Structures are given as structure tokens and as C-alpha cells.
Image 1 (cartoon, rainbow, N blue to C red):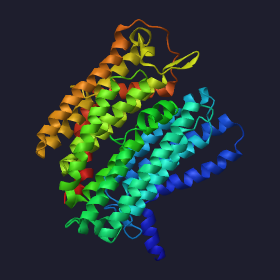
Image 2: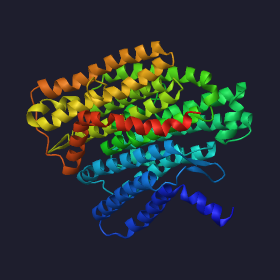
Image 3: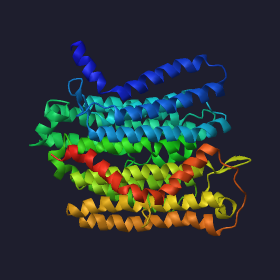
Length: 482
């Protein structure tokens, strides 16, 4: 490779270079900054700036026309650019949500934002993967960082248990993915997506088995049932800002990776993988809706909500069309916004004795904190797909994509489970609006309050931006039109 070719390749990965160099630099700098809290604050602020900078580079400074780098291992197209921008901004919001919590719980250390940067770097590589080896490198860089984040509160037994469970089950999913990748390589003769696509035009039984294992490994990353078993325990045990991060950027990145894997190398095998995604969708919707009805912890409820919402996204993806891609992209974008705001409310559940997480602790919130109650109401109903809120349009479009592809029965089933899911959101809101208050929460930090209010207003205000957002996701999904 000549110097000119190397520079051309590096131009395509500038956002990744920003995050990688920034993370390594901050890791060294954090050691020399005096005071644990001072180091944590400074590194967090610089990390947020790096994430916003990376998003700006991805949106405004990307080479026109994109291309591939490092012999086709990485691809830069409109789909990857959109996914990177959402992931970077979601990670920045997660850092904003974390700052005050980590200080209040006395676990604020500079390693936290560095781990967020490294996990985000892995996600960025994932959505640009054009080779199974690149896919695995990005996925593992993300996963290893997330394992540590789950157990970041070293003095908490719950956090340590969450980190261990996530690590053990994550290693199992990585094994499934690697076994599937080895089968695909053996029967396609290459790890590159272009070569796999040629082999998929006339698939062998071995290639189909490889596809099943690869999809199973990726299903774990989006917590789709029956690979969801880690989600409720990890959400409950991990520090709340970590759970908020898990529910946003990694979920979005993993779903975008699943879209690329199914639509590009295995696009010709849609008849085979459609059966898998339909089963995953039905199980996820059922377990998410029914499991959430039994929860008393708000973080566990959000975990089951996440499982169910991945099922709705898989309903759209099962269509296997370009319309399915942009519908899922818009759905996931709106979902990330809603969940970030909802976790802002959960992070506001602090009393003098510390954080509380029980649903009954929200009793009478409308009387003690009416603004927070109103925002939480809009966010939960939007995530649930209530008409006239922005989340409804995301869910409507994924069902529309399924209907357009002839999967009318699946869309109807999705509608039924969506109706059931509204019940557990209403169960929470009943506590908020009709129960008598037990004790008032402490005032939320300004940064969390701003995110919560903006996201809450966005459940209605974003209705005006839906046409613009729809145009962006349609443009980004056009790469799969061929």
C-alpha cells in the first residue's frame, strides 16, 4: 500500500481516528490530573466534545461519494454516516446523563468517559463493517467496554453480578457469532461481504447454517428473544446511566449492523433469514409485553420494554425491502430519543437517602413535580406508540413495511402486542397521576432536567420534523436499493 492509498483510506475513518486518539490521550491525561472528581469532570467534558466533533466530521466533512478502505474491510456510505451521527450524539447524551449521578454515588472516575469513547468507537466500526473480521473487531471492542461499564460500581454486589452475567452470556453470543462466521467463510470462500453476496445467490446448506449462527449472535446484541435473558438483570444491576447508555447507542448500532449484514452479504437469502427474523420478532414482542406487566422495578420494566421494541423493529426488517430499512432506521432513531428522555426521569428519582427505582416510588409525581410527570407521560406513551405522538409514526411505518411485503398477519400481531404494551405504561402513569405522593424527589440536576424536558417536548414537537427525518433515512437507505 502506497502513502497515497493509505491517506485515502484514512480520510474515510476520520471520526474513528478522532475517538481512538482522543480516548488514548484522555486515558493518559486522566492519570496525571490531580483529584479523582476533577479528572472525571474534565475527561467527561472533553469526551463529550470529541463525540460532538466526530458527529460533525461524519455529517459535514465526509468524502463525497464515500467508498471503501483497507481492501474493502470498511465501507463509508450514506447509511454508515447516518448511523454514526446518531450513535455519536446518543453517546454524548449518555455522558451528560451520567455526570451528576456518578458524583453523587461517589463512583465518578475518569475511566468512565474513556470506556464510553471506546465503546462508541467499536459501534462506529460496526456500522461501517464490510467484512466479517471487521464486524467482529468492532463488536468486541464495544462489548468489552460494556462489560466493564456494567460492573463499574465495584462496591455494589448488584453491579458486579450484572457485569459477570453480561460477560458470560456475551462470550456465549460471541462464540455463536464466530462459529457462524467460520461456516460462512468455509462455504463462501471469503469473509468479505461482496464475496459472500455472490455465494448467497446460490446458497449451500452450510452457508444457511452459518447465517443462522451469525444472526443468533447479533440477536443477543439487540436483546431479541430468546437471546434476551441478560437484559433485565443487567439493566437493574448496572448503574442507571450505564443502563441508559445500553438502551440507546449500542442498541441502535447493533440494529444497524444487523440491517447491513442481512441486506448486503445475505440479501439474496432473504427467504431464509426472513423466517428467523419473524420468529425473533414474535418472541420479542410477546416476552417484552407480557414480562413487563409483572415488573415492580422501573429499570427492569424498561428492559422488557426494550425487548418488545426490538421485536417491533424486527417486524419491519422482516419485510427485507428498502422501505423496511428506512422504516426501521426512523423507528430506532425516535426510540433512542424517547428512551434517553425516559432514563432522564429515572435518574431524577433521588431522595435524601439516595436513588430509588421502584415503580411505586413514582406515586403522586404529578402533584410534587408536575413538569417531570408531564414529560414522563409523553415519553412513555410515545415509546409505546400512542397515536398523535411522534413514536406512533415510527411504529406505524415498520408495520406499513411489513404489510407492503405481504406480512399482514405479522403486522396485525405486532399491533396486538403493541396494545398490550400500552397497559404497562398506563400502569406506571396511574401511579404518577392518581396515587398519593409518598415523598418528594430532590431537584434534578440542570443537565438531566434539560434532556428530559427537551425529549418530552420532542414527543410532540418532532412531529414537525418527521418529513425531514423521513427524507434523511430514505436517502441513507438508498444504498440497499439495488
